Image (cartoon, rainbow, N blue to C red; front, side, top):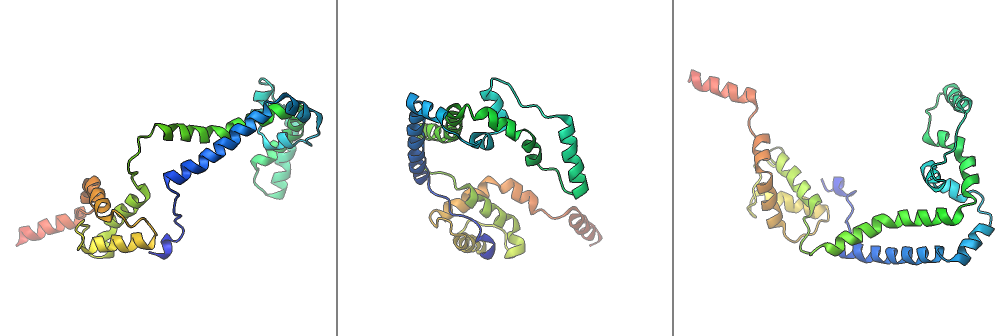
Amino acid sequence: MAANCQHIEISPSDKQVKKALKALDKAFDKLQGQLDRQDIINALGAIETYGAMGYLLSSTVAADLANGEDSTVETAAVERVLARKRFERKLLRQSDLDALCLVDRQRRLNNQTAEAMRLAVAQMRKPVSNWLDLAGRDKGGNRPKMDREWLIFLLARDAPKIIAHPPSSAPTSPFFKLCTAVLGACHFDCSGYEDAVERCLKKYHEWLDWHHRPAIDETSNQLNLDGIN
């Protein structure tokens, strides 16, 4: 079990996430401010970008920057790609199709470097800003450790097979000892095990009762034996 838990990563705390994202959001804000400067806009318009923005941005973004104008691809070009793939016995990839309009996209975006950069930075910043906005409304309090709860639930589900005992929140029970050993091997926070196990068993008790019920055939056989006796 411990070996199977080695791939589980220890997630950073909310405080660490907030601190890191605040630093990143601050950098995005500064970069957006620089990209709005007229001298930088003029400078970006004067240099050769060698199709960098067209390579990084999708056809959808390029069309948005061009007010809906999109690259067209000749049907014959698509058919040549399909024929080559059939001959090579290879699967058609998305990048194969994108390559058909890449050069045209690079050519068009080469004259919109500043606009493309501003859009790219704004879109990268959006999920960071959204998370920080939601976190700013949060009143705090303890966070439910969903990964730990899910592991306890799986152990409770399979407890009869693993330890031949039903799940129990009693600290002296075999199940609680199993949870302690497994959660410790997976490097979960060791605080609050008692509450976590009890809360999980209460939350999912109906499902666990249903899962642990005897199979229909076993119940029928027992009823038949009782009738014979």
